[in-house]
Length: 149
Image (tube, one colour):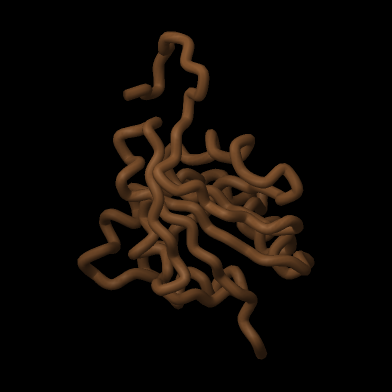
């Protein structure tokens, strides 16, 4: 199985068990740990963004320590207003919005999504796998929506 190092040549380096379907004009966020490698393999007519700042206090006590470790944007970088830019991008977007993450059961958390003007349901998540990383068995794509009101 390939991992984050050099590999022998393959006709197809990344193999999906079931490839996520992303419509044209979608906005797709890659959340936590290695998953952005999927961007060139999905719909080229979608927009892709990485990064998501967990606020551990948004999560139940038993998930807070794990959420803190999942941040790929550290607090010292908040001065660059990345989270604010993400919120603006979401607010201006007119098409479908997806999140791709290994933390999908915890990610569909109303408090965390609310900060971005989003809402979601666990039943709108579809798990999938690739042959690429040890995290692959936990990958999922989740369709979320803008909050109304």
